[in-house]
Image 1 (cartoon, helix red, strand yellow):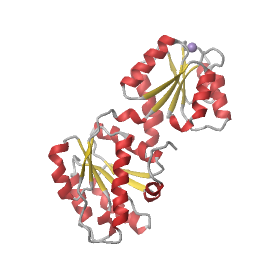
Image 2 (tube, protein in one colour):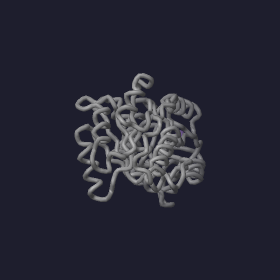
Image 3 (tube, protein in one colour):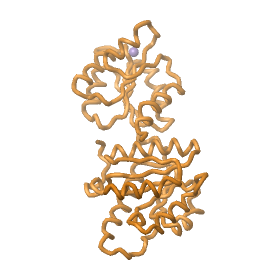
Image 4 (cartoon, helix red, strand yellow):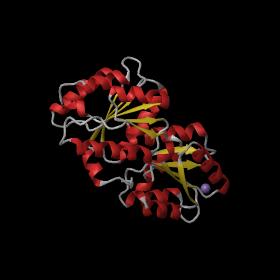
Length: 296
Ligand code: MN
């Protein structure tokens, strides 16, 4: 698990979170990223796409003695706005009325008052950065925990200072194993420009070393097959042999040779792309192996 710089108290409190999003494409992408971030911190995540399912889901979990600890919701939803959902939660006759809630929107200044009125505890604007998200969760959940002794306490001031400046994807880290300096530069530029954090290894040995030194620092490895000292297949076997089964390893080969794909999969790789690498394909791979895994 990556070191998120959050307290152990926070990790214990935050067993389940619920994320609610609209059907807009932008929101769906954000939902995957948020789910990935929360899961990487050890939380269970329930994703709902419809405002009308929220109350019943919360009540069901409460009944099962497994209450949700946090709700993050998009306030711009088509069928039922986040404000309405929040108000219904706050007006509930059961314990769910105390659920910590965070609103998401791009219209930060304008919506802050409305969010507070609807009963939100915090307010995040897009894009979301890992550190800011966890800082906010820690503050909100920490405060809620302390409040339990005094049920009638007034809502704390809504947190609006968490405007986030950097790309959403800064939380995803890629290890790029590639011996060719030109390909290295191109791939690094492509990935960092898109907001992914990228570390380069120039041969198989270095890839294994860098990954082993900090396995939790990486979400995916792009592995050139042909490299000096240790090739991509050997490096993959070395990583898999040490028991690291879950890190996605994606092969990159110069020629689409017959049987290459099988060789890569046999060595323990998960997927395969041919060079020269193309933007769309690289991003599809990240989508498939990093974000889609975060889906509930
Ligand atoms: Mn090579």
